[in-house]
Image (cartoon, rainbow, N blue to C red; front, top):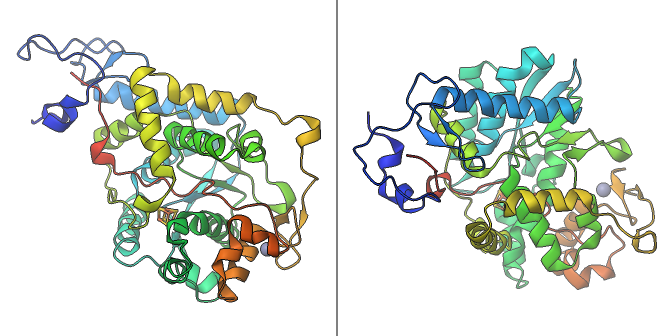
Length: 372
Ligand code: SF4
Ligand code: ZN
């Protein structure tokens, strides 16, 4: 069988020196001591076979969920399913763990209305739902937000010189859409596939923007569901992107790997590039950033007033309108500039919307995979 580790692109990106003699057999798996090791874990350097790696990965996610008390027994969990590698791995792992956790799963996919991208990704979600026999519900921006699709938002913001802000709009609307979908299927909890790299990128972005409020709120494994929102968590938050890719490979998961057409414009891409360079110099940089954010707290004088309810939809808001309503308001007035950046001060609304947690959509094939 051709090993993924023989692929030249992947071998070039190995963080470990290549074996002196490629003919030399890989060492035995450090866990079962029977099979040949198929990879080295990026963080620990432990040599494992594919089976033991997948078992260890699942055990670590289980530990994250149990130790963090993220999903109590009896929870009906809406998995934000995009068809991408992260949400595919999350759904697969939680399906494996569901009997032990005593939870039931529903897949909720969001159709943002992005031509040439989302249809193919949704097809992957439909295949997963059928194969894993999980109920799937698709909610569309166009239905939820008065006809606005992301393509329509992109056309509208392009004229205002804000075409690079698609992910800012999308991150806010997607969060709202997932919440609506989760309520539709009777979920008690929402989970998303953000991994450690996604979270570290978010921390970096918030630092670079000087957004202390988001930095202080961004720690932890999720939010408890303030203001009537469903509790939301990220069970893969401590798993590296490399290991998510490895898990998908060894479990032979079918997922959609193309990048969203608007992703290259996103500020997140700069944070991702910076993080890759940091990680090359300091391999623990990703988790260090995630844990740093957990320990940050705002000084009392810097704390914003407690949030209230959006005058239009009732969602949590620190001004009269929540972020989603404020963005839609700007779009409907034909003045999307007002919905973001400094111009927003003309609107009575929530704090500045950010690419808080857009869907992770990095192309998996280019991920470095540590191996023999
Ligand atoms: Fe939305 Fe993600 Fe595409 Fe940005 S990259 S527009 S957040 S789907
Ligand atoms: Zn609102």
